[in-house]
Image (cartoon, rainbow, N blue to C red; front, side, top):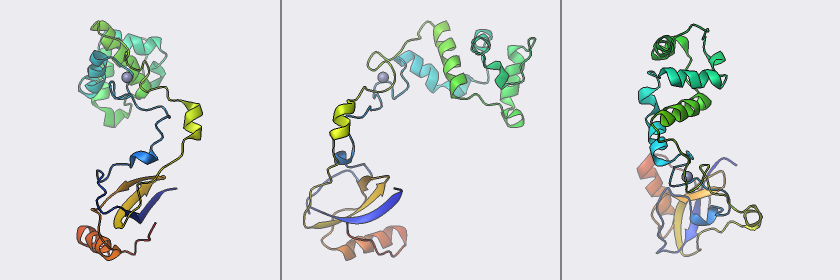
Length: 193
Ligand SMILES: [Zn+2]
């Protein structure tokens, strides 16, 4: 569906955070990203290990390398049976040259290994997997509901069907277009939705 800019008619006293997707466009029955673990699925301590990944991923330990090997990940790099963890770290410190950055799977293996060694490993008790369950039956029946309609004019931007207000509410379309011109320096003909 892409990116669409329109002027919507909304009440003159309509108030909603600019740039934030209108709540009526968000299907509340679809699985949602867990706010507690921010979608990682980890407990708080493990999430910290995950959040700080880039500060230690070029300095992994023997047991972490072992975890990669056990998971069958060494094929990823040029690791031979006698490769040491120091050599691996050195390669990663020169990642531009070797272009062997860890991917998401490696990352999860390394995070788990480190969190286990620190005796803090665990999953998010609030969601178990990073997102809520949702309700597929209700999700299918749910229908979008646009903002209330009124006397005002407001610019909305839609990305893949999800719209957000982008300007204050004005009393006519010319004011919206002028505001847009002042802000972005572009004179456009914005269609009325
Ligand atoms: Zn969670």
